[in-house]
Length: 423
Length: 172
Image (cartoon, rainbow over the protein chains, first blue to last red):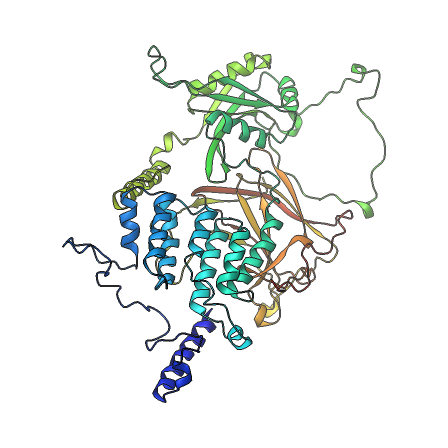
């Protein structure tokens, strides 16, 4: 990238020197490469700090813009920040000048405003943006132009558009390909970048062994079901909804809203709980974090403490099964030269009996979960349950919700500055 | 219990002040850690020799976030000083430990974070360090527990390299 700027700067000086010596062929209309007498790099538009000629002439003091074309987006945002208004601004720019003067600055500004208008994950928006480039002008005509990065600034801008697509994980389509061919030609840097995206993205699209539905379900009970089946690590685990959420307004008799309780238990966990010694207490611990893309959910676990080796007893009654032996004493171990296991002590943890996700992480709700679990695990009625709850997300209102309220504050600030965002 | 824990809070700033405005930083919001490089006498670099193995085996307990494993071979020539091999590690999350096996044939070559056009398989005889990076754009706390990192010779895995090694910048 640095070398391209150096080349561009070098070309600028060459042309200025050339004009001094009156090289008529450079000034002739046959010369495909456009040039101007000002410095090649950096700002080509001199009107950054002055009112743009297209602005209102009715005496209204429109603030001077430091970023070119920001006022166009600001005015559109007053009508609501959405894809429609963003596309309106782009079309307005396209219609105002056939030569698309200052399109590079406009595209950079539009890329920045994509996040504000909420279209950063929309492929159509990127195609519209690539349409802003004039077509055919930047295609190199011979090998010298190809060697010297024909129109490097425009190529860099094209690369930035594709880079933003890459950052948001959006796969370009055939329309993007045709646009890039028309604008930059076959052997240009944006075309190479498109080739790279089309090579690597399909390779990495399906490597996640735990794929999530896109978009994530918004219903908290559905989300809880998805996340519990994910963390259960057992296909035979059963999800049970002990309580559906009821908002406050529905039943005026209830003072507080009824939070949802979704639990999961696999047959192995059930068996472990059945063999648990009722004299030992079981613990309800939580909340633990689970991240699903950018959503954080919290789950609680029911487990017992790890007993020291002496107290761990596993009595296998051989007479329990006469059809097949429950214990075999066969010397089928591999020799030391063939052992392929890791000689590492695994982390010892107590047995885990069940997991759940609740709408409100207080002891009353979790007690309801335990009561629900008692139906399938009667031993819980005899065991004492200890609630070991850390300050969860509800209690940590000061920390994550300080961040959250800061986000809300900034969203309000953005709303005040840019107008409301339409869904 | 002998396992390592890496946790923290990945802070992401807001809509408007996402990246520090210093003119050169484009992206922010990643964190990571790596192993200390082995040094010999007089600070000579010492390398691991992993030629007897073909997979990396980890026992981890994450929180559902996707991580990236980086293997640095510290090559001899300074042109390649930013070369690193990467692959993704997806954690399931939850209270159970999970065992992740990643064959070395899947690691792809990057330089300064940019995936290279010409790909080469990882040379196992000169490994310097291994590291982990978290770069998903999710604001909030993260946690990763690693029980152990081991090497595995998976005899069922016969792939030499997962990516094509022929010239790829062909005519469009």
